[in-house]
Length: 177
Image 1 (cartoon, helix red, strand yellow):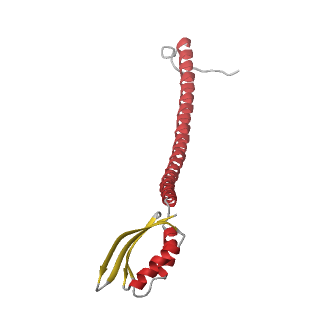
Image 2: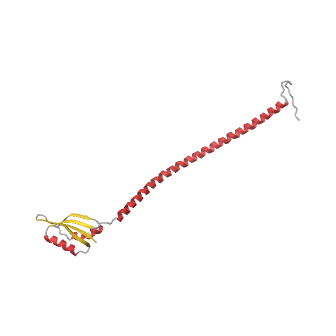
Image 3: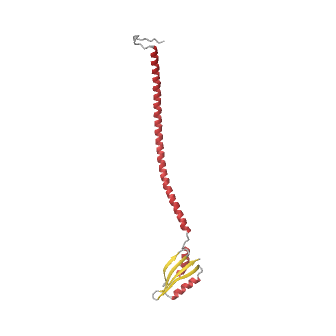
């Protein structure tokens, strides 16, 4: 057992109630200090974890922004490509004039070197041409070749003229089958 010596005079001595109260306050101060330190460490830990999480979220956000901008460019290209494909489909759906050109080409090859085609309009349904014939024989041969051909639905002589200096000028409209 420990012996306690009180060297203070009795009038300066702390009574027992006040001594036990001081011991209780001291113990309570130590407990509150420990709780405060735990609270500070907890708040600091939460701050560190939140900072790390925020940086990670910002990096992820930047990456998503880059991905969105690249997808916007891809989507723009896709929209333009779809529009071009639609326009190509519209153009391909329109009838071509190649059939008309192929049907009139053999007739043009039979023209003599003196005859000249002065105007030629080709569309999918008809061919309009103006030919200058230098001689009567060239004119007769051309019309004979047209009447022998079975490729045309109808042939219309839209204009006809004669000039002694240049020869015959015939405007012809040919409708395809």
